[in-house]
Image 1 (cartoon, rainbow, N blue to C red):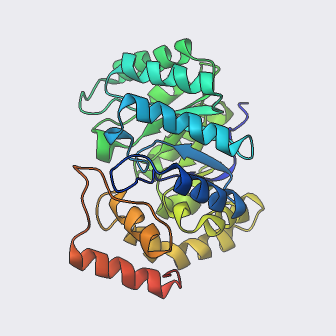
Image 2 (tube, rainbow, N blue to C red; image 1 turned 30 degrees about the vertical axis):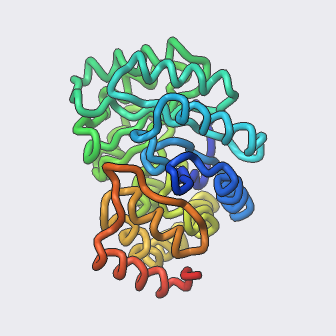
Length: 296
């Protein structure tokens, strides 16, 4: 049995920028403290929601080091290190390990659309080159590549392949991963709207976008299931479904950064090719935030 890196809710944290697009570390501190003070169980830094694809190498590594140092052991820090270039991703992963992260989140190589054999070799290379637990990340809607359950079973044989962030949207696939891997691969939901469903498949929690603005709610939702109150978890998900979906009215992380701005934070601008929301979508998001009492 592999001990999960965390149980509960990990926030896929945004990267706040100054007006000149440099990283706003003072606001980053404020956001990290808000998360930890409100129940977040782990922090995933420089993932998709953290606009990792628009950070240069120096910024990427600096954001990881800052997060590890500032969190200072209060919760686990998981660093996004995936790339469409395996060698480049491993270089970032090695730096993250040097900085003291608790684990690595490694997305499937995007754009290349490698085979399942290629995925196995890719993750084996990350595993052998680093010394921290690895969470694989399957999000075919963004990468064009799905990690098949049989591939999960093969990779679960490696001691530090700890789990998978499953964002395929296919609950049957999640169940098959559980059937093939048992306790040798932990599963976290990569979709906020599927928290109860993934928990029912043996999940350990969620890596969440919603948690950026509702950390306590997201934590409580997962813990309700873990503590045996499946109905409460499902009822909470139903209650917050509209908000979770509104955060994807445009491509992530555009809506969540705009939402944080409207909730009193200073996330700063989005980096191109991400841009500000369409006016009608922004108005829709504002109305939903107001419905949940989150506007500042």
